[in-house]
Amino acid sequence: MPIDIDKLSLEELLDLNKRVVRRVEYLQSLKTRAHLDRFEPGDRVSFQSEGRMIEGMVVRVNQKTLSIKTKDTYWRIHPRFLTKLPGPKAEIPQDVQDIMEKGTLE
Image (cartoon, rainbow, N blue to C red):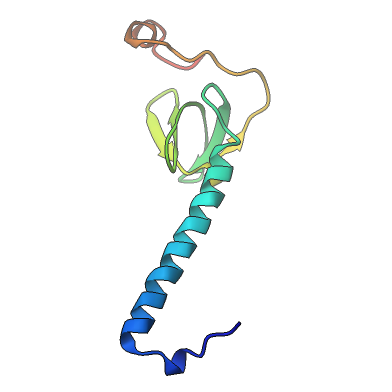
């Protein structure tokens, strides 16, 4: 059922706009959740940064991004920019002592 927006008042248009924006945000969040659900901690992944291919490990699934540990640093990246690498999952350090002992990805 089409809506003739030419007949709507300013208040009705503003209300319609809020409802449309909420719906779009909801649909985008569903898509992001579907992308996030493909990954779990321990998965090895790769992504591009400044033309370089970077490999790392998923250490945490956040609300909208994944926390990735590389050899040098941590990244927070939207899942659509990640490629899951084949092979067994990496062991995730369980506490600070494990992190200090291992230091980098193996």
